[in-house]
Image 1 (cartoon, rainbow, N blue to C red):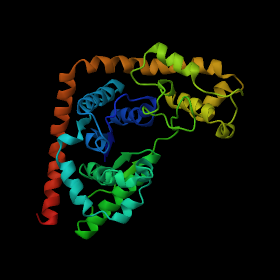
Image 2: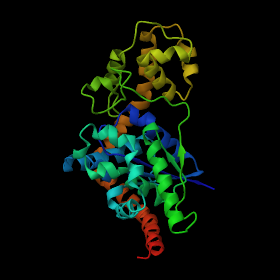
Image 3: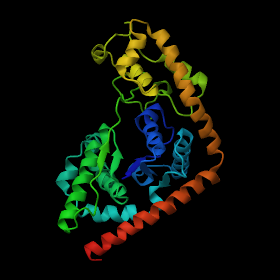
Image 4: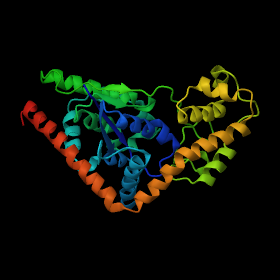
Length: 333
């Protein structure tokens, strides 16, 4: 049986190396495997849990689609669509919010982190975000969902909601219970300026990240200026644990070359970081520059990007609307 895989990316704009290695690179591999049926969603409904400029949001949606395609996801093989154009997502989210329990949502650590100390001023959407995520996944009978550490808890909630619906309405296996897909040999990508912080577009310094639209000279400059320490590259992974910046750069190298941290260290053990950075820059340029060039070309063809979304939304709507109709019948609408 084929795996049915669903994943979403927020259209925040200016996607970077962390987004690529943490998600998109894996999406491409999943897309290329004939054993998988993949749906990749631009989760624009999730994006408005915080304030958005409408014009910028619209362009960010297109840029996310362009990044998918430029990275190697084939829209003829996988469904690419934006969430807001398939109304079943919003409708199912309301129904599932009547199944989910407050205690479940209160345990979600990501809301606590994003809302901060003054959570009374956070939007209700930010609080109920995981229920919409559950709707996204369950509408397509997804069997597997690629998740990072920050989304594992949300997927567990999705599984709880699916199980409770099935039990409450005595419809065994109506909602499939999705399994997580965890990347093997993946290192979380951190800031180039501070190895204790996740790489982020919100960090003020552009030197902290490799943007997927960066050009060759920008990549070389950023890696050259990336923070390291004065010690040579160690021979074992254990020694990296107390050296966050060194671990981050070695992790980027291993992720780009599809190798283990041990193998990466074996290639550079005892050498200084100047030599390693030259190698890392070359690999990054080979991988990122073609993607950057294709993103820029695709962004000039808005009609193609819009047509890709239109086609994807039509396919997604056929699947999701059928599921919602069945939900209506089960509930008694």
